[in-house]
Length: 310
Image (tube, rainbow, N blue to C red; front, side, top):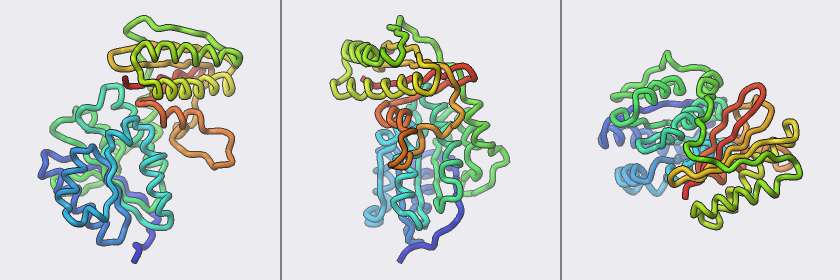
């Protein structure tokens, strides 16, 4: 038996306070999906995976679980490789997803990217037969995060009540509001201006600084690949040159690539292109490989900042 397909996307934010409230908001949602023969995905931090799984008992075997702290470490990965991948796997069926992209412990740099992600879910899954419930810890998350939850979710669930939220905003307006200048490095950064003949030097500089910082060899290669893709975009889609900066802050290696030109498509890097397409993979690959990708774009330039945890 399979569920009938809806032509409607439902995106709800759940404000919870404590363990019991969390389970009261998520477990009936999951059970309703199972009762309707809908494929169910629960993508939440591992501690919450364990809570929901234990509460579901034998029904947990019918649910797919993902540790969002791993799958969604970079929030820009969530749409293409968590949500869209699950929807596409069950194309033609209604699906149900618990997705928790923001939790206490997210770094300040990650939060705006998470909010942009939550806004763009409404674009990426528009007219998709999916229901997505996003839990928010109302006791521990900053008030500003909860405010943005209302701007990115048409429906809010709190204290067992569902209500349409008047503060819901146009997704692109939310993303543009958080298109903010990136702070300068707090320590001296190695800098290199490059053109099409300088990509090898870009990779060499990134590799040298990443190895000095103690990044694992396979992660050094990942970071080199990611920076190479963004640098290639800068010289291909702009005026043929770019500027690279590389530095270390705490347990992160950071790389900025700045080039002329503006990103006009906010879904760039969040949509997997057709297999035949020769474009649209550079930023997508960087999102796949890096622990965080930040972007600041304006009419005359775009800066992409890649983070890799040591």
